[in-house]
Image (cartoon, rainbow, N blue to C red; front, top):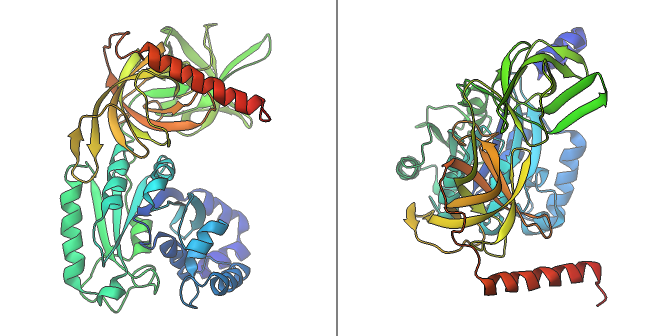
Length: 466
């Protein structure tokens, strides 16, 4: 931090330029409840000298108020911001924090460990490049460890750091660490996680978080912060095509028609040949426009407006592609994580959002449900909260998509309850599917019961007083 202070004092523009060009690493912390996720992030910020004095004073005061650590300063309060979190000493919602070192910028998603908040964890993981799996050294691998690891695998996160926490409570026993390491490697064999690192630590006391611990002379690996700063992230940048779902058609006057969206994959240049899907119409890029002016190119993650050389019909929900074509279909297979208290009903009509396209549709078949403890495939006719399954989906209109493993931006979907607009599931598309349009339509009695339920919901909403 001293180097940064000197550079700010001597060359503020140079410091800002250096900061702007740093690589950004998005990571999440997950694992079972009480494994120490929030404490780890608090310790990381504290020992890296990234906490302001007023913040430190506030958490000292709150540590005495809530007394979650027997009078000691509770660094978890840096990220546990909700009143109910502080009272119970747990994380309920996903907490995002930002910090920077001389080598990288970081965005942290601190995710809850309770099973009932698995849906929050899946949401926090959706935009991350790296997962930190915390394991309590006293308890080893638990059900939530398996569930979170499986969801991480589904979401395509290929880089994992396994933090074996609370080693101080096991007298920093090397055999305990090695046993947990062996068990997790067995678990990871079926999850297609490419890169796994292990570090023994005590987040409460700071052992191997920022400073190397004298309690683990048998560990010669990197500390936690050193791993964060140096780990090479596999972001699946080998996708050779280009994808931009159209969010909005900008037509301010007769002389301008621009197609606005965020690039979900690949790179585009003026002059490139493109195809608009699902229509299949072709044209060339005339210009790439932003609020700051025209660009020479645009890459994944940038919000841009594209103008074309030809007047072709493109609407919100269409996808502009280059190179390898995407799939256009009204039916596909997808892995879904169910996020709603009420169960999935086969044949019921839901809203499905793929990219920027929203369409009515139905889950017509559950191919199998996944037992996160054994990874066994189980027959199922419905899904409950936090359950994961491979399902077949039939939509009313075709949508444009890729396999999620190929590109996340056009391979992900959400399922929405059409009555209250609540997101009830998230999914990762595997492939197109040929389905019978009449398969598993809801029986008349079930449709009538669902209709009566929806009428009751609307009646309570618009006539709350009866």
